[in-house]
Length: 349
Ligand SMILES: C[S@@+](CC[C@H](N)C(=O)[O-])C[C@H]1O[C@@H](n2cnc3c(N)ncnc32)[C@H](O)[C@@H]1O
Image (cartoon, rainbow, N blue to C red; front, side, top):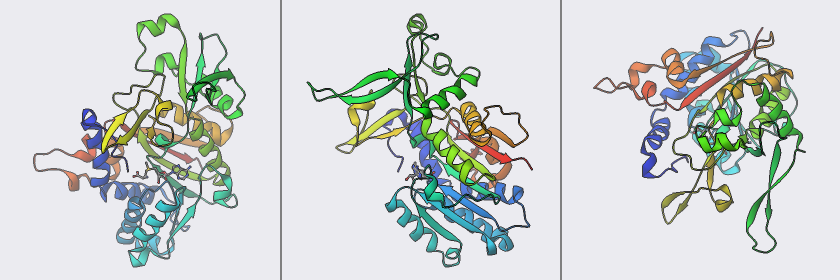
């Protein structure tokens, strides 16, 4: 589902292909981490947000079946999936393994909507999500100088030309306000600093354009409210290559035309028929997660512990890395994830 880059981004494409090719080892590594950190005295509960076609769910369940049959016997794995078509695919894929049937269920709905989660439940559980944050909604904010107020962006239809245009309005959205509050507490996340494209002219103009992860904050707020004792394991792209759209944390927007992938320099060009994906600022993600859990963006609290690691570091600790080494010693599981990271956050007991 992510094969959306042109040849210029072959390296990036290679990384994405590897995510699929490196199964089951990727899913097995996540399962191993869970096995090492879980409370063995209670039945294991795993939720996966945005499980795609169900590959990871299948591999995690298989790992427990093979390595920890006693845990497997009582464990449950619930997929929370917004797409009805993918929910159906996941069920078919996982339930093709007969023994997984009693353990796997799908909850079709948005993970950001509390109603999808039913009632709040404080049992310990794991929430895993891979390559979901990059697809979640962001908001675009702008300010003229670092001392000016932030403005939010609305997309409206120009009455004369019928085209879509941006309109800057004073800040009203409470979610954007909360997100900006957290951003202001993270050292070095002013978009001037965060953007790789802090050119001299931008420095001279002082204006700031910033894509902020409001969808991520909304999802984290829902997760902490509905599963307050969750351990969260998430992985995503920490940076993206050759982004042509302006602003800090700007996305790649691409669509398929006559079989060719085309990158857009504006998200307005491709509304409705394009793929959009954003890089994740992991330092900010950690703050947003603590804020959603405790109401404070402070990381050093007694309530939760968290860490950001590169995917290679995570795999070194948890994967069977000898299984993915090629004959010449190259190990894609360790060496080809250079632009992805893991964020892990646990309740401190
Ligand atoms: C890019 S795919 C990643 C699939 C899989 N995790 C992987 O790593 O290959 C994003 C997944 O997240 C799902 N998704 C997006 N927004 C969601 C939301 N708000 N709630 C639940 N699932 C969501 C999509 O339908 C899709 O299954």
